[in-house]
Image (cartoon, rainbow, N blue to C red; front, side, top):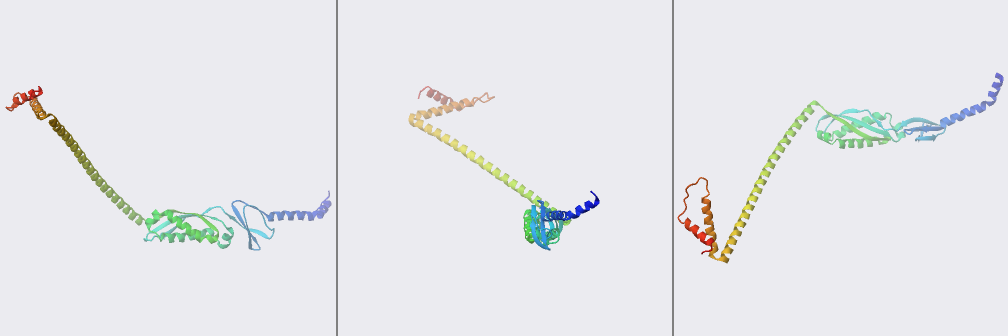
Length: 296
């Protein structure tokens, strides 16, 4: 095929070639594949036309233009530090971190120019306002409550921008050296007070336990005396009953038996060679012996 023949073939098929090229351009301009992590903002003649979600989307070629490709992944603002004054006039430095994501790209791209800067400024103002409502001790102890209040306030402020604040964190609360020294003195004083209170409570408890022990001992002594008295009463009752049943002989027998036992005990002392006994001791012994033999 000569050059002339090739030229003639191209001239006769130029319309087909242009049509194929135009068809390819139409497909490329009219079909948009959006990733899962993004949304496309489409304009037509400079005005918002549509927001394309993930997947295959079709637009009008040459009329609709993808003007903005917005990531919907969660973002983190750079850690920021701002000064604030508490209700009790203490200067503190607050380090914050904010996480957010874009839910409505059409609001974000048309209502705010610098999203990160706007959120950072809003957070700084809200943090100062919330810190000013609290004392220093409340800032230190109620950090979770403070974070919740800050997040709620930020969400309300950025709602018109199509943004959702997912997390707002207070990383650190820094104090100047003078305030730290004062807090350290207060902490030491509180520890000393707690130690004194604990010692006083220990002494009080020891006194209470000692009183309880004395009361228990007294109760046990009284119980023993009551038991002994009951035993003596029982013995007396038994003797009285025996006397009532057997007459005076039973009583004389008991007296004589006690006298004999007393004499035996008198002679059992260690190292005693001479024993002095009453004049009627032998008579008592004889009486007891006669009674043991059954003689009256």
